[in-house]
Length: 232
Image (cartoon, rainbow, N blue to C red; front, side, top):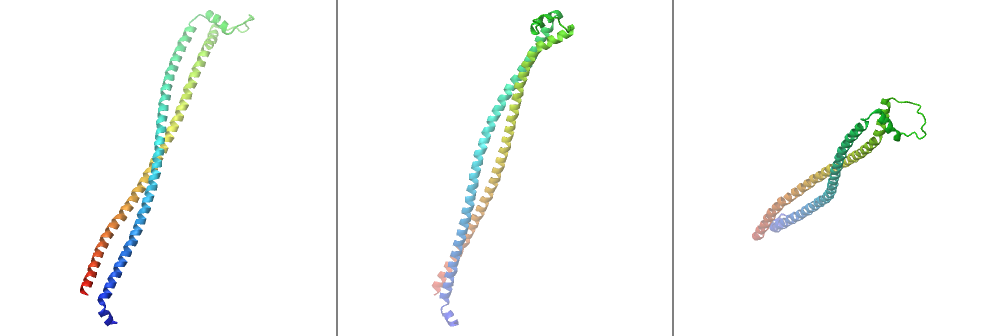
């Protein structure tokens, strides 16, 4: 056995070198397959996340457009509300001046003006006499009532505008909350993409490092095989 080994040492070494070389090639190819599979998997995850981010971006643009529209509606309502408030102040001032002017008359005139407002068609004697102050109070109520009705209708419209404005503000606030949630989710996804790219970069660097190692290993083995063949 010893004599056989001594006689065929070169062949045995050559076969061993070839076996080692084949092992290295197989090992390298296996590592490459695993690395490529890992890179492909990471890229698929990256693209899936990117698709989700694109959907989020579309949703965000829709939310932004909706909120922009809400802002215009809010500004429009505020303009109308400001106009109505100024008009309401004008009406109150106008009514006060009218009432003061209508009340600036003697009690007899007040009584005569009350006749068309509270007629007594049968001309029955009045059972309940009123003093001048009472007559003036009744007259004041009579002339104030239609004006108060109009002021009330204006106030109701202003109140409706306020309620509409509050609803628009609530919608806008809710829209902003959804926008923040959208951006937060997008940022988290972006962080995940960065982590995936870092993993890909790490695998690529390792491949480059391994490639350099295997290249030098191949060169050494080829040189060794050449030396054995020459020596033989």
